[in-house]
Image (cartoon, rainbow, N blue to C red; front, side):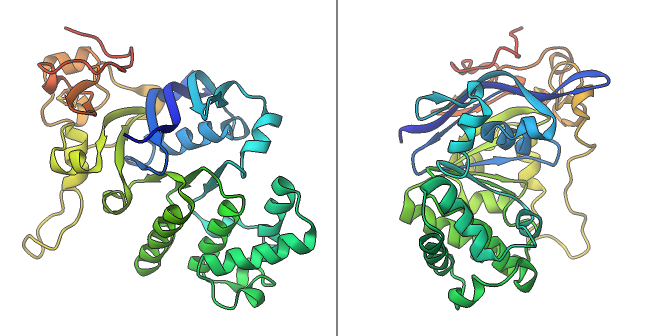
Length: 338
Ligand code: SF4
C-alpha cells in the first residue's frame, strides 16, 4: 500500500449555534496515500465540504471550529497549527479547487495576475518571472493562446476555461495534496469530462495526491483509488473503488449506487431514490443515523450506533448487518457492541 501523505484520525469539526455545538463531522478517519485519489462521496449536507475546510483550517473563517482529532500531513498535525503557520502550507503544499470557478476568481484582476500572485507569495518570484510561469501554467492546463488569455479577466473566459485557470492557480506551487471540492459540478457534461481528464493527467505528471469531494458516484468511479462514503457527518463505508462498486455493503452506499440513472429500464419508469432526506446535523436520530431511511433497519439500529465492521481487507462499513464480522481496528468510539 502507498505511504500515507495525509492521515485524519477521529476528526470532529462543527459550529456553535443557538442550540449549542453542532458536529458537522463526527470522529471521521481517512487516509490518503502518496499519489492516490480518495473520493469523499455523499449527499449535500453530509459534511464533505466541512471536512475539506477543516483540513485546510479554513473552517475557522467559515465560523466553525475543530473540536477534536488529528490531521497528520507529512508528520505535522495541521489541527494544532496556528493560522500564520497554515498560511505557508495553504496554496503551497496543499491547494484547493472550489466548485464554482467564477466565484473563486477575483473579477478585478487578470487571470495571469491571479496565478502569478501565488508564485510571488509562496516562491518569492519576481513579478516578471511569476507572469512568465503563469503563462506556462495556462499552457499546461490546456488553455489556447495563453499569452493572450493571461491578460484577460475572468468574465472574458468560459466556465470551463475559468476552472482550468483555478486549477493552474492550485498547481502553481506544485502541491503535494490537491483538495477538489465538487470541481465539475458547475460545468456542463463534456467540459466535466475534460476537467477530470486534465486532473488525472496532471496528477500523473506531478505525482500529487487528490482528495476529491463529489456527490456523483459516476465521477468517483472514474477517478477514485479509494472511496469514503459520508452520511450525516460520519463515514459509513470505506474501501477501494473496486470494493465499493463490486461489493457495496452499507445500505446507504447501495442506495447511492442504485440512484445513478442508467440507460436500462423501461422508458417512463421511475428513477430510484433513497426515501426521506438527510437529517439536520443538530437533530440526528438515535442509534444508526441512517435508520429512518434504511430499508433494513432492525431494533438495534434504532438504539445503538454501529461501530465500523471489517468487511474484508481494508473495506469497512458501519452497519449492524455485519456484526458477525470483526470490528475495524481503527474504529471510532461512537459505535457500541450489543
Ligand atoms: Fe440500516 Fe441498521 Fe445498517 Fe443502519 S445499522 S444502515 S439502520 S441496517
